[in-house]
Amino acid sequence: MNQSIKKYIFGLLTCVMLVSCNNGESLQTYFVDNQEKTDFISVDIPTTIVNLDEASLSEDQMEAYNSVKKLNFLGFKLTETNQETYAQELSKVNAILNNEKYIELMEVNDPAAKIIVKYIGDDDIADEFIVFTSSKNMGFGIVRILGNDMRPEKMATLVSAIQNADIDSSQFESITGFFK
Image 1 (cartoon, rainbow, N blue to C red):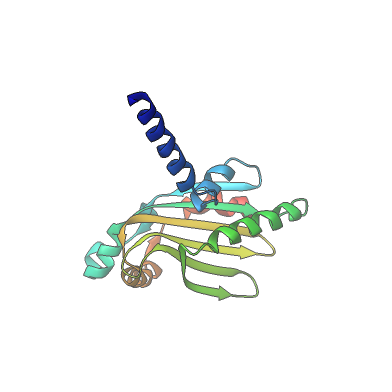
Image 2 (cartoon, rainbow, N blue to C red):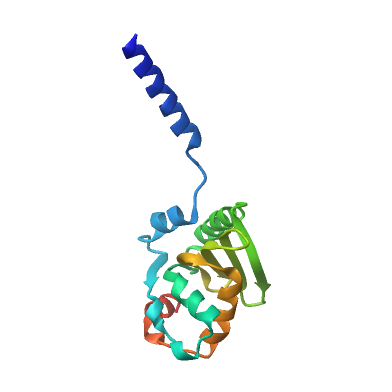
């Protein structure tokens, strides 16, 4: 009898685990699955690329700056020979980002490129920010901004400080060289 109870509990736990697994692809798994493919480039961007004068930052800006822990970039370069693959990969990314867990902050449609900013979290705290840009001429790029207790309204204040900051462009040479 004791053996049958163990089998029953094990079977029940197995069913719960199988039902709770999410078969939908996440952005994280998309990054991992494609980071080594030839049409893609994957770069971990250090937060030190932005040289901010911390003394000039407001308390909100400083809190936002300290909440960012790492940035991941994945890019797909469009060429004459991979246009069909580009369409498929773009469709995959759009399907992932259309998941309801990604909350849209803004979308900009420009003749040269489309930019979408989304986040995962709630109105108060974001676990991850996503910046997705696509161009019919160059390809697409995704930046995952990961951190702790990132607040969307405070991150917006940080943008103005970053616009005036000294950015180490040498950190982006591998990315810009890839798209040339």
